[in-house]
Length: 119
Image: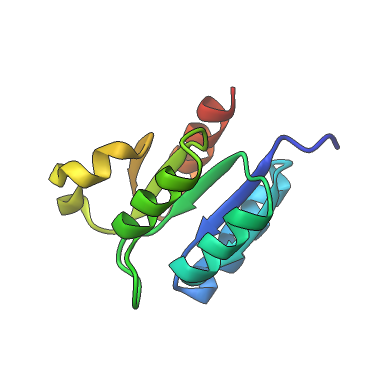
């Protein structure tokens, strides 16, 4: 199967990392998962990614800080915020992301948004 793109998923819950990697790999993406923002930034500096999915609430540096730093490095990478918290949607700092998805039992909305952003 032809690879559709390289995704970086930043999620502090290891079980969700496994789920996202498995589900998105089935969709044809090359998926890298990390559990913190610092590791994500190191990888972004070393490797090209086509899209980034990040949680907001994480230990140490949060997803909003991560988005700000990603944009300073590479403005061209689409970013999807994938969080359990609806409340951050009204924080103007999250508006820099290309999409804001509230986590649910189904990954359909996330998969659909990834497909849409990668064209």
